[in-house]
Amino acid sequence: MSEPVTVQVRAEHDYDVLIGSGLLDRLPALVGDGVARVFLMHPPALAEQAAAVAGRLTAAGYGVRTHQLPDAEQAKTVETAAGCWAALGQNAFTRTDVVIGLGGGATTDLAGFVAATWLRGVRVIQIPTTVLAMVDAAVGGKTGINTDEGKNLVGAFHSPGAVVCDLDWLRTLPEADLRAGMAEVVKCGFIADPRILELVEADPAAAMDPAGPVLAELIRRAVQVKADVVSADLKESSLREVLNYGHTFAHAVEHYEKYRWRHGEAVAVGMVFVAELAHGAGLIDLALLQRHRDVLTALGLPTRYRPGVWEELRTAMGRDKKTRGATLRFVVLEALARPTRLVGPDPALLDAAYAAITGE
Ligand SMILES: NC(=O)c1ccc[n+]([C@@H]2O[C@H](COP(=O)([O-])OP(=O)(O)OC[C@H]3O[C@@H](n4cnc5c(N)ncnc54)[C@H](O)[C@@H]3O)[C@@H](O)[C@H]2O)c1
Ligand SMILES: O=C(O)C(=O)C[C@@H](O)[C@H](O)[C@H](O)COP(=O)(O)O
Ligand SMILES: [Zn+2]
Image 1 (tube, rainbow, N blue to C red):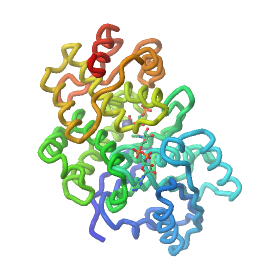
Image 2 (cartoon, helix red, strand yellow):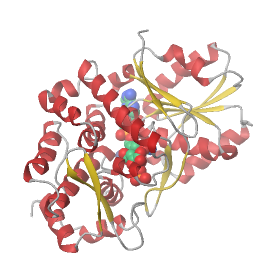
Image 3 (tube, rainbow, N blue to C red):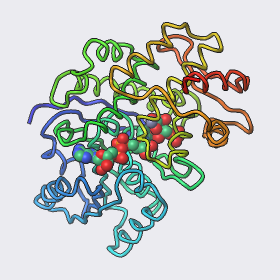
C-alpha cells in the first residue's frame, strides 16, 4: 500500500479525499471508532467488490448490511431511497451507524441523500469507483435524486466523513463510462486549471489510461479544483455555481433523453453550448470556443446534439437551480479559467447557440 495523495475539504466538518491504490485496508479507520454497523450501498455491477469491502469491514469488527441498488440513474429515485429507509428502519440503524456509497456518481448521490435524511443525518463515507464520481460526485456534499420533472430536483447538502478514491477500482470501469467522466475533468480545466487541458491535449490516450500516471494526475488536479471551490462556498451562494459549467443545457438533455445519455456526455455538449453562447455574446474568442470542441473530440466525447427539441430543452432549463424566476442564468467563460454568469441572454443568442450545436 503506497501513501495516497490527500486533498482536504473544508465544510460543515473538514474531511479528506484520499487518492491512491490499495486503499481498502484504510477503510476501517476511516469508518471510525464507536461505529457498530455499516449500511453499504452498491450498484449490481459492483456486487463482488461490495462483498470484498464488506469482508474487510466485518473482519475489523463492524456489522455490515449490503444493499444492492438499481443500476446507474435508476438508483436516483424516491422509490429507491424509500427502499433504503425501509432497510435502515427494519435493521434499526442508529445515529452512531454509518452509510457507505460504493459506486459511481448515481450511487454516491443516492447514498449521500439517504445518509442526509436518515434520522436527519448520519455519517457517510464515499467510495467512488468511476472517474466522474472520484473527481466530482463523491466530493463536495451535494446529494440528491431526480423527479419526473427534472434532474437532481430534490436533495440536501451533506458532506461525507471521507472520500476514498482507489484508482484500482477503475480497472473494471467500461471505457464509455471512463470517457464520460473525463467531461467533468475537462470542465475543471476550462473553469480553473488549464494545465488539465494541456495534459489531455498532449496525449488523449494517456489521459484515459486507468493504469497510467496521467489520469492519476488529472484526477488529483480536478479533485483539487472541486475542493477549493466547495471549501469556499459549500452551499452555492455564488462561487460554487462555476462547477455547473455546461450543466444547464446538460441536465435538460439528460431529462429529455430519459437518462439514456450519460451525465458526462451531456456535460460535454452542454459546455460547447455555453461556449457558443459566450462567443455569441462577445465574451470569448473563436479560438477558445474551438478549443472546447477540439479537446472533447480528442477524448471521443460528443459536441453535437439533435435539432428540433429546443422548446422541450428550454422548459427543462427553466427548472435549473440557477434560474431566478423566468430568468435563465448560465455559467460562461469570459476567458480561460475566468468563469462568469450570463443572465437572461437574448432569445436570439440562445437560438443561435442551439443551431450551432445541432449543425443547422
Ligand atoms: N453530487 C455531485 O456533485 C455530482 C457531480 C457530478 C455528477 N453527479 C451525478 O453523478 C451521476 C453520474 O455518475 P457516473 O458517471 O459515475 O455514473 P453511474 O454512477 O451511473 O456509473 C456508470 C456505470 O458504471 C458502473 N460502474 C461504476 N463503477 C464501476 C466500476 N469500477 N467497474 C464497473 N462498472 C462500474 C455503474 O454501475 C453504472 O452502470 C449523475 O447522476 C450525476 O448527476 C453528481
Ligand atoms: O458540485 C457542484 O456544485 C456541481 O455543480 C457539480 C456538477 O458536476 C454536478 O453534476 C452536480 O450534481 C450538479 O448539481 P445541480 O445543483 O445542478 O443539480
Ligand atoms: Zn456534473
